[in-house]
Length: 393
Ligand SMILES: [Zn+2]
Image (cartoon, rainbow, N blue to C red):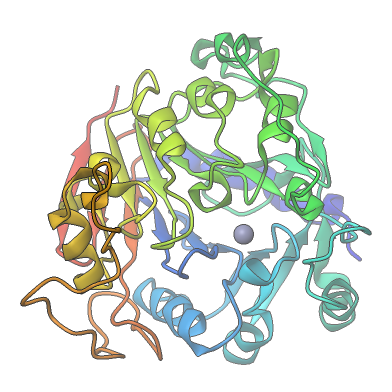
């Protein structure tokens, strides 16, 4: 295993470059059907892929399509946030198709977690050898063109405020902690709390990715003082499920824009939407899927949603009267029945816009974000090419 110090010599040069470029810091939020894979491409052309989705060609094809779109022929960094199958399942397929220079992880898998991919961490270690770097909070990943700081890893959190971010609230008390209510997390897979979480800074632009960090651990990170300050773009933790994304985290980070990497039936619960919509500076929510859990009252307008599958079930959810048509003594809910005239689902569709559907419900689309060093950024839905720009503040 390589130490981060070996890579750190590169870092000084990397940070010096960040604000002086007119190029953008690009992010591809990939649809892995409720899994996790985000590609970051820095203004200097370096690449960092955070997780690889689930095993099988569906997610792999989508990741390769994004790498192709970004012109990446060799990955500089692959981060494995933790060892669940929806995060590391595509590992072997990725390594077959593209060289990877450095691997970042949180260390040994949680010993009592029943959902870590059996034997994965040992096998991974053998395959990558000294290209593996285990990180701890406060470490900087020496990817060039941006400043990437580890804020969580292996159950530990950053406690020293991010330097230079006091004006954004870093190091200040987090008022959203006052109403924090701890959860019983005895049924939550503990390797989630080991997730490598990274704060990405490019000039004035800031975004964060905490993997599958969970509710109680969010308090450890964000309370009583917020070590991070505000961010421009928040990727929901843990696919937008309500076992994560506490107000202490979301309201403490005060994002302008949230991208939720939900599946159509994973993440996007009403509670998560409520927390997001009440976040103090929120302008928009973008979603990788229409979320059946959120219903028509909560999902973002269609133009902000990258993937809308199961058209028949969706049409029925929209057309069904509130409460599924059930009054006292009324008929049972009919949510599974297709609406008249709804288009049947026809399996895999053509490659289009970004990624393809493989063997599942149809084409898949990513959400792309391009940020400038002045803090402005643009978000694009590749399904409908809807683009919205957020001005520098
Ligand atoms: Zn997950």
